[in-house]
Length: 575
Image 1 (cartoon, rainbow, N blue to C red):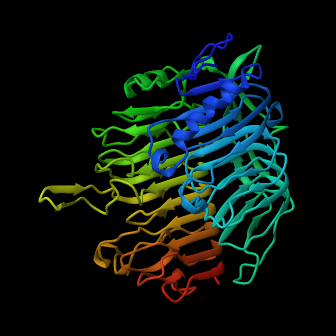
Image 2 (image 1 turned 90 degrees about the vertical axis):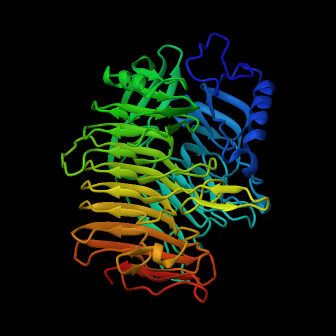
């Protein structure tokens, strides 16, 4: 290992300069110093939150006397077949990202496929993941009284207690622990978890949790592995149905040699990447940023597109289409990518073709997919629909679709004014109508988080859709009620199921009012009436106590929140 992340000791570098590959025989003091230095640049919200830096840390099988520190845009991954093959002393997410241990902006970091030999404080919010991790100790999801706001745990084991602390919402899937401390906040969802699962009542005085005994259908995220005989490979787990608990010790799937992947370079053009895809290559995006002047076209069945270190696909300003288009075909896997909007594109990611309904024995699976509009710099960014899922049977696993609410370029629309010196200044906007549009049938999303869009944040038109854990905040600064309407109704529902849909299910839905403009949202959730509609454990909260309000939880039911009411709950709808 050398300071720029390149490799020595016979481990040929096939990744980016921001990929650190460590062996147990390396000098741990040198490795720790490198990790600490990178972390110091990516730790705080002020320096790291919108940084252009990316970092992927990979650990070859073995034991490590290391404290792996994860700042913004940083991932750590064990390269063994299971978490038992890589063991580290400690895993740290800073509790000083914002003042007062506030973790509501602790985004964009993840750990997978390793064992941590100590307690872990994982005080995070959206766009984070713990996957295929074994923690030999306790797991805390916040620090002290510091706020935290969302996260994702899958295929993992905690030998001790999970203490959610102040977490506002959390998704746990196919995981286990010795004890879960409490469920006193807004929206904790458990799917296919084993062992001590907290049961509760969906009431103001109850332990609020949502428990699904099995995960109906999901494939775990693909991941990179290494051994001395066969080198680097990507393991792609099979889809499991009605699953319970972890399966990292018994997982089945296919192993793809790295030679069958095209390893992207930040200098690559979209045309060059498409040529590799057309030639039958899979795509691997090392930690870095990739400017796409045209969409990447994933057209062949079974293609894997895998990123690391929050590899970022940036839509070029001249690209008015999207960053990634996935054909209506079998077995495509897309995982661990951050997509940044450009000046304008119709979509950011498109799956399948609208109006085409093709059954898939092996579905498209999207894991750890994060789409961002605005925030990075003071330029205009815009899209109509961030993620459009048209392919039947698509599985989504941990999404954050975010119209940025702070930093730069985060206005409702471009605003030009005179500053104190009489100079014209423009604050650019980041408009987006819809975060997620689903027209495909039998689409499922686990841990779906969509925030601040100006129209329907989620617009679900396909049949037999399923959402397990939903989190959303209203847009912060709406210029006027007149600019935020859906027909004759005030505002645009966060979760909208089309009027003609006959069957739809959603479990553990949390929608939060964060608005500084004194506007009203008629209903947080809109669904059609009918026997095929099943909405369970719904909650709305008013995080801003002012003149803004939500009148109803779902349709015309459930009551509202605002200055005089903080939280409303609906246990089941239809009532």
